[in-house]
Length: 278
Image 1 (tube, one colour):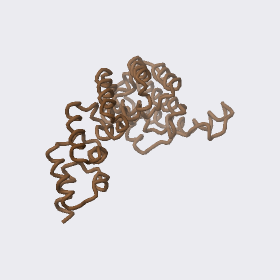
Image 2 (cartoon, helix red, strand yellow):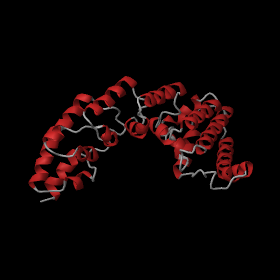
Image 3 (cartoon, helix red, strand yellow):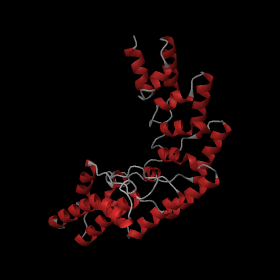
Image 4 (cartoon, one colour):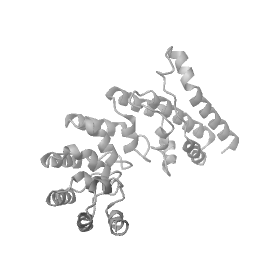
């Protein structure tokens, strides 16, 4: 591994990204407004520090840098990618997953992925969210997932499903179908966004526990959004603790919407109600 080679690769990559907008504008004869600039964030440099530690030959590392440019360049061209930035790659290859870059076999994998996203008008952020720290998705699995959403008329909920599946990859389609059918039966499909916020990164919730939560909310006459907002990213709460929170908040005549907006979670909110609202 050559330190000099790493410096050259990095400088060349940054220079290419910075020149991309003006170069493509010249080639395509378009205005700069039509060629999106890729925003390079500070985290990208730290990401490259990790990339330089991947134990591969100089030739293989050069390919990895080519893949990085290809992914950023191609994803920036997607009309669904409103504000392209280096986060487009640090999201999918963040944490310790940067080594997965060495698993990419060729640029064709990236190009075929971007062509599919362009053809189907799929928001890049939804896919990069699902694939957070997992690398680019298997194209066949992605196609199967999107086809399922289209057939079930659920494509409009892709963003919510992406939030639930953040970093977990594509969901089991049978489980997803059961989940959606349950929401339809309970007339809660409109709350999918709220549920996905509560389940952010936790995947599809257990239906038995979700049903218990729904019944609890209805029996206690509290908006479901009160719970889902408060539990953002924390999953379905302990109903005993939730019951204590509701009782305490009503006793002190507190605004439930204001409490839920703090997104502290049930336990922290109960502690707040007991101590800060004396």
